[in-house]
Length: 317
Ligand code: ZN
Image: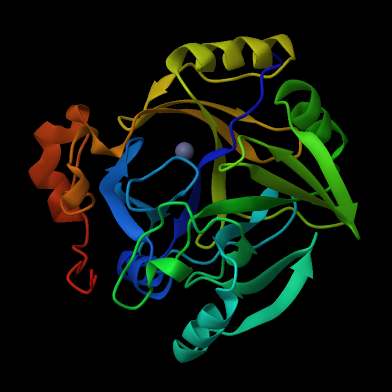
């Protein structure tokens, strides 16, 4: 069978203040904080992971929070909207919730037949909550966000490009996406298995200025592959198609290769295994600072640099 990407694995973005980032995603959006670690390439910066109860691939939004970072400038050559799927009938709950927290939003509108709300996170990153048939998926529950309305997974991601021709060839001919539909100026591509299907919306504006990455910007999009073996298969396939990929990098919770798509967005392909329970059990995910073994000997020094965050505000029901 033709190889296809199994949907999204995670999306990584840049944030400003770590506490503000933590509060927004755990408190306002009710996601589970499943891992507190550091940027493996720069261990003086946190790496936060927000997801469903289990850290299931396809639900995981991660951040590098830089205290006092200035905001990025949104523009072409980047992923500029992250969309989350919530169960059908949930938008009224979210309208009330966002209003309660003083977060302005647009919508509900419809795109490709799906109802959605659009708003910004605490660093100005564009988010959407999209109603979909996802009530049977795991989600998470806090005492303010009941499971019946909670975020289940990524619905998809929007890429804003100066030119999409080569990007579309990559998605279709190499990564196995199919063109689903076009609506207005948006082309929607889809790949993945039914429950964890991912939509990639492409908007082209040849005259748009390029974005500048900083707080509130998506850093990269990570696609899902089942195993180390299938990952090597992707590496060969990408190299044969003329893409330069990195070697496999051990990210402790998954193994990764990276390459830049022709429109400018950094892509990663990450394995489902070993997952977030490799160093913490299910009940305690995200509760303590986890360091990969190469940094464990520097723990005292690293803990001095990182600003502690207050996780007690996380009210788990
Ligand atoms: Zn990544």
